[in-house]
Image (cartoon, rainbow, N blue to C red; front, top):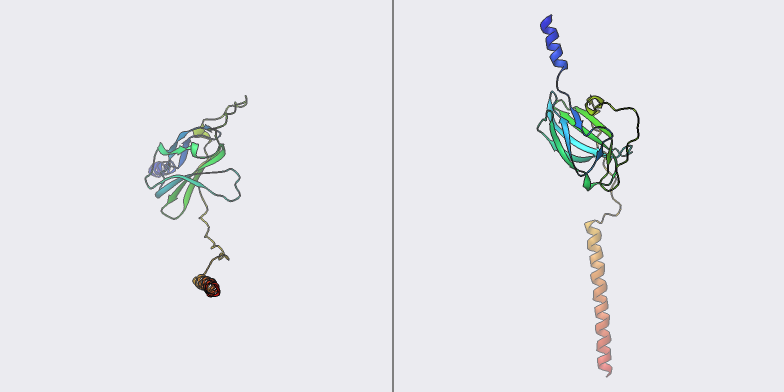
Length: 189
């Protein structure tokens, strides 16, 4: 019985993905080192990405990806000078070998490269970032991509060839008329 409890304790102490730094609400400038853990049971790879908060499209912009697990180390370097100042959400997505993924998000990151960093107002103290991180939870499988409708402005090869043919006939007609005009003018002199 004791062996079972010890085994269960170690199973529940398994490594879970986390972003340690930057923490929620942090003001970011320049090159930002993102630290944390991407390792998990069944690890295949991880992706770090950022998004605009409340973006209805759900678009994530890739910062880095790797198939090497990280435990309490540097996940990526993020050059925040390449994006506009504003608020962003950071996401660590860990892909597992069973086809599922684990996701950790850090909300309310404030990129302030070109605007002043706001002065914090007195208020309740925040818990350390490591304590306020959301727990890794299995995410929903990615949706199937829906193909876009055909572009109505597409030119087919036959339309291009017929346009070339009409252009060649028109050019030949203009040259023929010009040639006849010049001949008649020359014979009239």
